[in-house]
Length: 305
Image 1: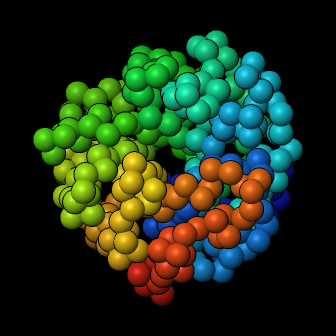
Image 2 (image 1 turned 30 degrees about the horizontal axis):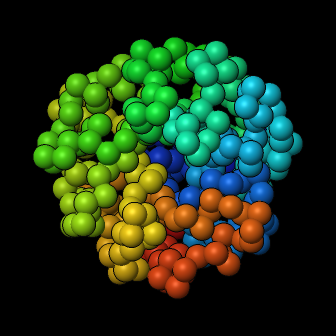
């Protein structure tokens, strides 16, 4: 458990994240295979200026649970979240997923068991926040908004102070016509999320649309009096279905999100999918290495570091 004397406490104030009560833009990197984490990755990301990681609990045979929902690596989870905390970094703990082709995709009963286990285990880690299910509306084994409400209630019973969100597939919150799906937004809010986390459509011009999409979401939240952070934790990445944007475009999208008022942005990369094969930084392609090196300097002014 992290020492309470040194623990970084992540919070929310209006539409911003906070570290120890002070507003902080979250800039993170995907780090899905965290059971095979590397100290050197965290050291380098911290040195560059990143203050967040996104890890996955359910990553098939490399995840923290077996297919029956029993712990495989609780100690390792404590170690990686604690190591991030020691480096002034928050951790987006993505707990469940809905894609049966690549992950465990626990059954309904197992989902509740895993949620209770994770939220209980990380009570003493105030730098953790939670995407309770990645792309809950995925066609594989989806969770309805009613299902999410039950899971979030279980999570809050285990850890009442936890900051919880849920991510959704493209078109769920912002449709392919670039209009809001307010019914789905309202339903996610009713389920109990404290952060809005869309996965937006990876259109060829996604970078030009990022700011517009974020502003649509923020304006609607303001309109209905539900001001909260808008957080982009899985935007376009290189190598996705032959979609390989340049470093300049990836950086531009992140900057557009920040300028439109997003509270956080996670640089997404497939280099995190198998950390048994090497460190994240070793597996980045040349354009991704440019992004990882340059992005903190673009996103942060000295006052916001």
